Amino acid sequence: MGPLGFPELLLIFAIALIVFGPRKLPEIGRTIGRAFGEFRRATNELKSSLEDDIDAEQGRSTRPKPDSRSIPAEPSSKP
Image (tube, rainbow, N blue to C red; front, side):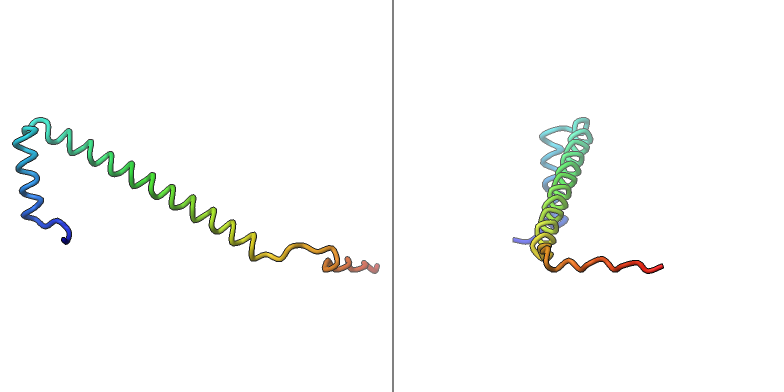
């Protein structure tokens, strides 16, 4: 099963026109469009949040832990 083609979309539109009528159809279309937009935004926010968390976790695990013995002494300043 592949993506919907033009004949399938035309059949769905015709059935929706018969069931809901021509006056209600634009309102339903807007509502569905807003719902898909909100779903897409929420999905993108979740994906971004997860990627940030993964990057932060990987950044912490790849950095060497500070060790007091490995801190170089400050160079003396000579006038």
